Length: 283
Image 1 (cartoon, helix red, strand yellow):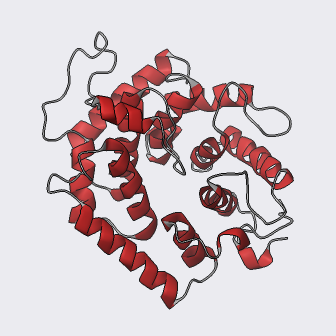
Image 2: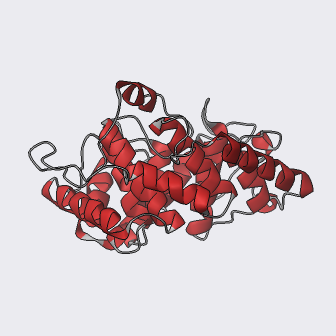
């Protein structure tokens, strides 16, 4: 795959955490970017509530954990936030929707539900709020290696069963994406029956140009599938990357919004598929 323009050029002066991460990872970012990353981490530490959340907001906690995943290493701070999303301060929910979603993380306020419909520049997308929270909680518990093992395992097992029962479609395309993100990063479930069904369902929705139909979010799906090592998943990733190259803006960005996040997703997927991801060698 070949990009006509450097995707990092468009975010070279962007101070969003995802842009800082991209420069440090692919542009050998220097002291200024390292100092900027430290300032962001220090600010998030100061703003975090004693219970581990940020202002008791699910959306803010997901947003800040994603930034910390990009910029730092797991520590006591991230562990408390993960435990808050995992509802460790509450007994596990039972008889959720007739038991279908038992063991998942569905405690949300009306304010949470409203804020979760406005997520931007994240792999998690608007949909059933409980699935957003559950997908994010499992994703962070996995990538940080934190969180109660029994509670995490129970939620993954439930997601696996729901995924199999629904032939790889946990919910609507946008909503189910949140569980897809969590399953994709788990070393066991990323190669499990539910993921294989999900990959097949996505394959049926991908067109010859590399896009997915039916409301499937393009960049989050590309991010998730790039972490799945199966041949059908990687075939879809290659087609999606070719589409990204065709629709790339002249300044190197992708799309009209969330450009730093989109550049990160494309470069990360290129690196994972063995494409040339060094910005100095693109074009």
